[in-house]
Image (cartoon, rainbow, N blue to C red; front, side):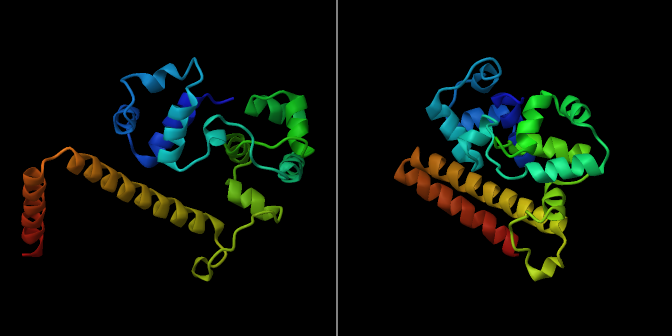
Length: 198
């Protein structure tokens, strides 16, 4: 299974932020995240990371949170001709655990579902749609194309994250300044904007 650090590194890569920069933005000491490869972080720090990326703590800890997907996994595994032993070896879980997922006895993590979908040479959304368990309404402008819709959502979320980051940096920076310094910053920003308008 994926450890907390690997999950955070994956999120950092998706959001185009360096883990060292994340530590600074969250007020963590240097190297804090890297210590999490061998130990479980304190809940308050884990919560800060989860809030920053707008994910659940369960997601960071790679706990299963997806239910009733087992039939799709089993159906596609059989359709593609994989035995339960072959697929369990490819995804790095015991055969008994994969059987629990397929029988909907335990929830599966998003990370593991992505890994399984990749082995099936399809996206998670394609897998869910094929077995009629994709639960979002795709807006008409996407003509039913799940991958285009998901790419749009990912871009939208990335843009929102960048906007939040800018606001956070501005709020922290401005809070540390005197009234006179804040006025100077505002004048400088107006100067920069005036150059753009020319």
